[in-house]
Figure 1 (cartoon, rainbow, N blue to C red):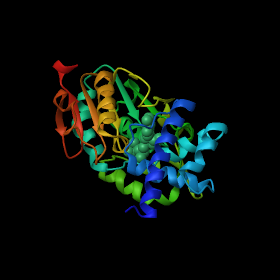
Figure 2 (cartoon, rainbow, N blue to C red; figure 1 turned 120 degrees about the vertical axis):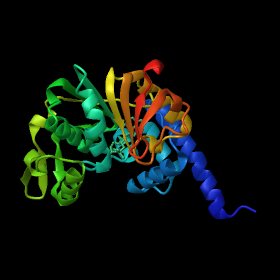
Figure 3 (cartoon, rainbow, N blue to C red; figure 1 turned 180 degrees about the vertical axis):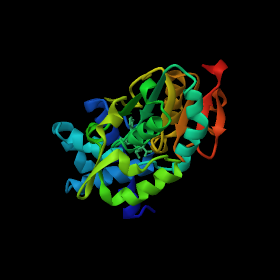
Length: 282
Ligand SMILES: C[S@@+](CC[C@H](N)C(=O)[O-])C[C@H]1O[C@@H](n2cnc3c(N)ncnc32)[C@H](O)[C@@H]1O
């Protein structure tokens, strides 16, 4: 016997698939490779935010109101981050990866899924502190244009400063975090010179191709939203984008271990999710 709640859940699952197909056919945004449970939760939240009762009620809006696309992408993108998030990763980068990068004539860094830029400013600070900035170029990409605009502004909520300061110190910061921003009431604005070597660009990991000849790719807390086949596709994109011996950094809940690409990389630090493309695999 099917309960009415069970029936409703099944109908919502069907509506979700139609939503995904409509989004792809109408606007070219392809979410078909995203893990369903979290995607469904966010699409239901989107319906409720628009005062609609269910996913099915979103469909006519999606088809006939192009203005909704902006809201959909913004809502599905989850641009949550922090300065020096998971500071041990930055500490390990500083100790083990940057010295290798410093031995190369130039350093291209691709930060995929940069959200509102917290990771970009963290990296730029660290590169400046080790003297790598003049030779480095950071390409910071995301598919959420609003997040990219906010990243370029570099304005963050001052309420998080104590936590960010703690992260910075645990990441091995050699100055004071306050040296890198101007505080204005409840907001802080990151110093503009940190962006001298940064280019922000729209890039969709699902549909777009190789981005740059990268020496380091950071893509943290993005693959977590993807199904395993999509993770593998994106990891292939990263392998194709990296130079021989280039580094890949994933998020704390993401690993290469179960991926088809695992044997193309060597492990630099499994705990910090830092990997290196094997020279012969490039
Ligand atoms: C949780 S944030 C991670 C931010 C940062 N990397 C960090 O670890 O703190 C996830 C970001 O991935 C982006 N994203 C999700 N799917 C994407 C895709 N297909 N292409 C590009 N960016 C994507 C979202 O827009 C969001 O800004």
